[in-house]
Length: 154
Length: 269
Image (cartoon, rainbow over all chains, first blue to last red):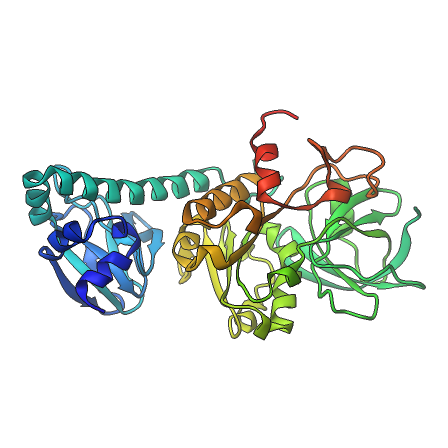
């Protein structure tokens, strides 16, 4: 599968035009992570994002006395990382590979430059990221409802 | 309609508040059931409640498996029933999942909490006739890893179908997924127009899952949900289980989302 096909198939970018996808490819490289390897660390500079192609990743945060607590897991086709898009460009959460992971890694600062130079591309990219964010926030809100608790737990 | 006596032949603890009873007829047995149907279970001297059937619909010995969560006086008595206890059973009632109508297609089963109980017969029916179905995915959600029903069965199921278990809250040592069921659902429906979905769990969970499926392009007529209201007579006479135009004990509990969505979104009916 070519890099162009790969992006076209991935849910976050399926709606980009071929021309927009080509622009995105300029900011992309293939990466792999071993099981247990950290992709990013909370509070560190955020300069990239990943579209996962295989394996699973845990999004985590450090909690005193509990270690790195997993708040979400992500799998193939899902996007990881948007802290590169908005100041102060630092990771809000960390992420660690739960299994061997392959991913397309995108250069965040370059994406910002491309988006600023071409507003149509910038809008398409922002909309793709917004759809991912909306999906995540729906899931998070649903979890906040604690729907599966028993009648005895108030 | 009088309850038929059934004896508790086995009791399997599922979670801290949920157990599965295996019931065998004392004399005559009830008619065969279909996946998704329910019975009215009667605990002597306490009362009667609707409980979905969680066993294998191909069972021919008249036995029933019913998974009961302790949430009130009647369900507490049923949940605590030890082997040898005689219970009254009426049914089976209602429209089931009609699993067989999905032959030749992909299936996605989404279960939240004890919603896996009415869907276990779907899983067992698919496993018994695996070659007749395309890709089959089960997504089961629970509060914590200890809250999954049928924990001893997942590995066996995963040999024939894709099984994804996801928990709402972070737990030390858990190696499965963390997230709401809609999150794996979004990436696991490959061919929306080829997919039939079976959803059971708390109503918001079913609404959110159905909305995720609709966004993917699964038609509402191919999304089936199991609805629950106050079932009492089981025969569509008393009206306690009315939901809009439906009497759920007779017209449900399973309905397609094209019919169910306006009823689930209405604030009052």
